[in-house]
Length: 494
Image (cartoon, rainbow, N blue to C red; front, side, top):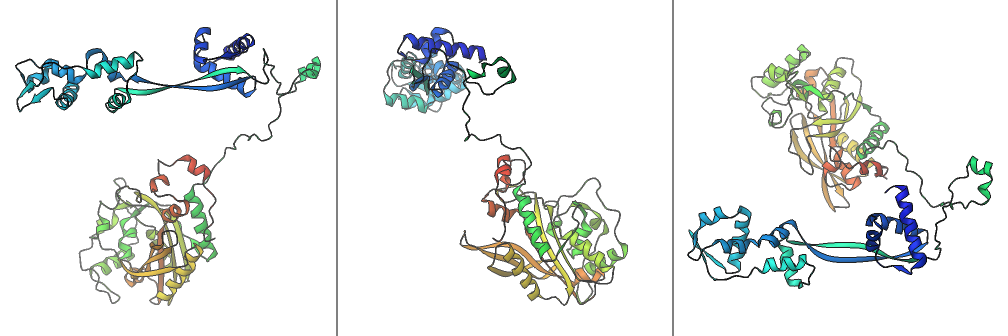
């Protein structure tokens, strides 16, 4: 509605109330003066806000026909159409079906049988009564003509989606406490022209609303995952860890699997679990002497290990893939560490990994893995348990339990469980273990060097912290931007 039309409608309402006590129906008023009812209602609300008028809501409910109901009101209900199509001697089902629209036939059969109008044998349809009254059509016509219909019949038509309730809203209007035949528009600003003309003395200024909210500030917002990631990163840094470079999503199977003493026939290396690249399909740069030592440990063992006893294939190791865990980066870092005089190290990483998994409320094909490892001489399982208690207590998980587990590249291995106060039960929060000699010694690390490591997903603690029960609401294309803008600050372990 243009400003001029709104002004005209406003003037018309105020002028009418000057000589009349009430506008009893806003719809009739709009129709008489040639305005849209919606426009008149908007003007009435504005005048009511200025207390120039008092407006009361009017609500009327009526039943109207759906498109299907209008059709049946014109040509008859499906059951009556079917009944009328059956001759006195009966008719074959196939012939009757050809005479009627498929939807009319289907509905008509159900309702005609329910009304006991026809009998449906295997091949023949015959009438059970000579005459039938199309009650449905009569009811629809009565509704169309705004005649009264009892509630039981309304409910029956509603169930068949032949009628729906239509709600009409309007207003009745009387003079308000601040009524005037013409609304005096308050000025919102004192302009230079007002000062030059001197008319500012007569101006009525609009009052300031000091309770009104200002324009919302637009700016960047941190995703909940980034907030939790930063907190976990701070925990690692406070514990003296340094971050591993995890910028390469693409890895070779050698660094992702073979260097970790994971056999080439392992199920995780199947295309059903891993995303392999078509272009480039294979790597061309691997440290050849190290590759030979890895091949030997897989085929025939060494360092008091029997190996796996199979024919290790270089072409399998060369295959490129989207890394399935950040442990592939750990392998590279430990190999680089072995090429220099040994020095103890603490490494961590938090980055994305990829698995060929079916997407559901708790699984995605890509997620973020948190990994920490410590490399030093003479480390034991007790050291690992102590570090885990220190790390998880900083996450706010002080009650831990450990369960023996199996991993191809760690021995011993442990699943980590924490007691969840909200769920009142123990929940798995991560995996851990000591890297096997078959993984470390071919790299060239000294024999007395041990590596303890653990990992967990970033999404699971984030979902628990922010009360999200579907991972697709946290990460991916279906995330609500409102969640990104309004999620609270993250403070782990407080």
